[in-house]
Length: 114
Length: 114
Image (cartoon, rainbow over all chains, first blue to last red; front, side, top):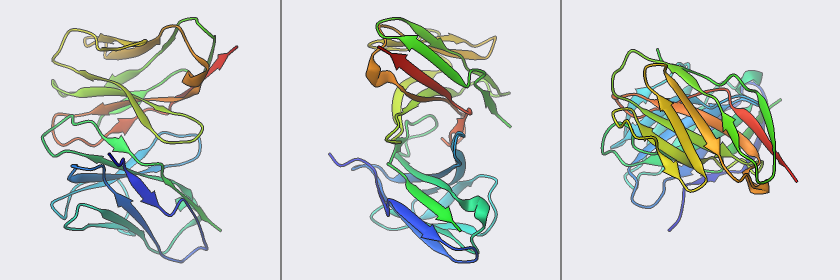
């Protein structure tokens, strides 16, 4: 049973560029959430996708956008990259059965903005 | 807004001994869910234990157990018979009764020494 996968593993970009990160959920899961984890801190919720729509959003600017595909995989896009966007980006998947469903995390994508 | 506080940035314990990690949270919701996640140095976040707030019985998973004190808004994790593989960053997380986004604490680094 495949767990949550993310690509790429590492990424280096320069300020002002755009980046796309990808996530495939755990088999059978239909909901994908994205988190940003700065070095030495806890993850911060970016947004969540279900049925190809953004269902919840955290306190992140519009430069952060996402998409969910019919096969439940998801992308996170960040435009106009800033140095402060350097972080580990975690994808988590779950079932849309209601509140409190356990989220299963992928290994993350380490983004460095120079 | 919900907040989660982990007051111990770092802890260490001898192999085979018991250690308790602290977590407090703040919410006005009456029904919610609490989690402990483990993030080893390889960085993949793994669920350790889950507690439903409406259940008074403390959750237990093998060597891991929680002390859930709803009135005090406290949710500590006890690790018995500590093993070297328990060395990791431990995050306490909250999920409310609407949606299932996670709000994380800042984490506690646990080092198990031989």
